[in-house]
Length: 392
Image (cartoon, helix red, strand yellow):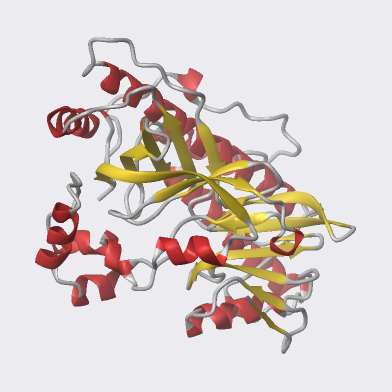
């Protein structure tokens, strides 16, 4: 929609209303010494930590922990069932069972889960391989199959195809945060020693991918991406059983659609092998099937990527915030937000002031986001929410 040419490399924007702080962060990215070709900013973009959520950075020979973020591998899963009709009584029973069997927020399982659900570690590349993963492994056995907090959710939806779907949004829990924080600290220290000129206030310290630290980060980052996927897969299995338990007939489920939106990957773009950092952005190569969720109470979408090279084959990961969490708590009216969801007939998770952080009014219009990225994805199925569990 717009190109900014005032910085070292251009910034391509798929929105016309980027907030000032996110724009400053986008300009910082464009002035990194290793940033390549251009910066892409998706239509759901808003201020993040160091880098805008909804931003894509292509880097030559460097990886930036804060350009991936603390919830490494966070992503979406959507599953289509062969259920065509359900009612609120059944939905409420399903949601109640989910709350009992899937820990939410800061809660973990009381007992370690079976190790078969955990990703395998690849071959060690040096003595510090998987240093943080090994430290956190025992704790992670109680975290796998848990939703987490913030904007994570489980939602049951009616598809425009006539079938009932369910969707899970979750990440790598505490293991991802520990890996992110550890390697960001290493990057800050290494940049100081090597004289890499990145202002500290940008919060974009980087690791050379050929350094021991860079290699270790990429290895542990990938483990966290795999753990986040495994985390969703375990929840999916439990949700399937919960749903099946409410129906006499056998319920069939299609293969899950799974896509991550916080990671870095080595890819070919504009004739150069680069490390593409997607922070709150998902892969949308030609014919890739992906998911763009809305906010609580708004529609979500199953999409097919168009493979637009200018977005580094990416699209938005959701609606994107228009209010910070604190602003939402201060400014939104709880009764009005509850009424909005009640009027839509949605079994929702709005109970108290703190829940306003995830009210639909705290987010951008998902329909506008989808309109702004028509050149990035094609909508396949429109999903209307029926019931939602939030990771409060």
